[in-house]
Amino acid sequence: DYLRSQLRTAMQDARKQNIIKCKNLNIWSNAGSSWLNMVEFEKAGDPTLDIHDFWGDSCYLGLDLASKIDIASAMPLFVRDGHYYLFSKHYIPEDRTIGEDLSHYAGWAHDGYLTVTPGSRIDIDYIQEDIEELAKNHDMAGEENGGGEVCFDQYNTAQLIPKLENKNIACVDIPQNVRHLSEPMKEIEAAVKDGKFHHDGNPVTIWAFGNVTCFEDRNGNVFPRKEGKENKIDPAVASITAMNRAMVNKIDKKSVYEGRGVVLL
Image (cartoon, rainbow, N blue to C red; front, side, top):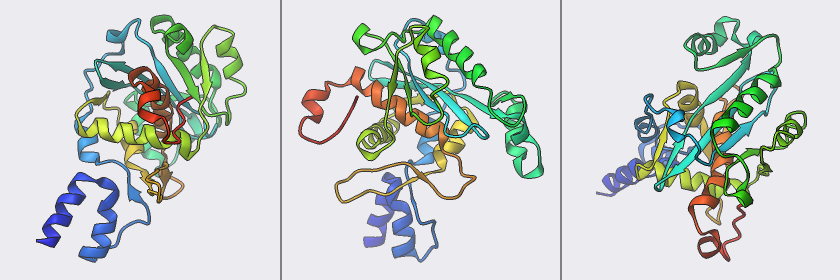
């Protein structure tokens, strides 16, 4: 009965699966705990989602440019009727698609899930053009104007952000720490479980979300991590960053978060 109860727990809470495998079933597991139930996350994918159906809606664009020689991601997130809708745009330099060990990148690029930029470094101009085009069709005028924003980490964005702001696109720096990312991670996890999180089914996105591990500290906070250099999580981190701001639009943050030490910028 105890093992059955542990199995039910593992099926409900992905973060406890590795612990239960190791402690109760003697199965070796990675050091980290899985963040999401990936079966549920994959079911949330819908390739028929069309970003044009969200014309004029507030767009919370999560941006992760953690590396100029690897994957960069721009993840538009929309909130409608209590549901979240996530779209994907991924970039990679051409040199990172060459080689047998990089064949998965080449395959995704061939199928249109990755945008390849020439050379050995990501061309930021490609990303800038796509964001500016997105801003033409969706509201990115900032919270004070009732719109969405580019939600970014300062790392590697010094070149891009001033150019976007000069185009009247609102940009908000989201520090990459527990205080700013824990609650958005929990919101994504809860929305996936409740069937209120939807994404475009991009396999790069699914792969990156599956690479995210996390530990829950004694205060119940979580933070995205990865097991291994090649287990990229940039698209997931960009999505979590966008969720920080999307939650501002969806939730009365004063009544829900007052006194909990949570920071939603």
